[in-house]
Image (cartoon, rainbow, N blue to C red; front, side, top):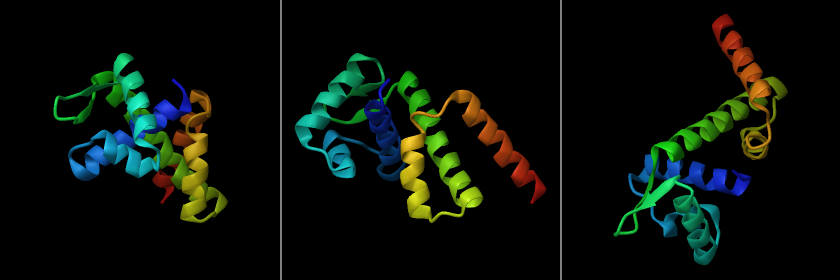
Length: 124
């Protein structure tokens, strides 16, 4: 899956947690994308089995989509915390950098950072 698809899934997950319901217009607002762009992406995500779209326009993550979104969001949160704690950058910079890194970091490196952060937490 490409970075843009991962961003859509993560956005759907976050909006669902905040609002309880997600529609294409909510995604367009959150990402500052045009409605036609979101409509196209939603179609692709649906075709690939990551989401369903109800008759009322509500978007739901499938189990496959939920698993992918959870993984991306976990990476985002952990990398943000890691960057703030280890490099001392601001929350804003950590968020921006984590958003880019979460899509390209290898699973081995992510698991290493995860172990490191757990060890750090255990020491506190």
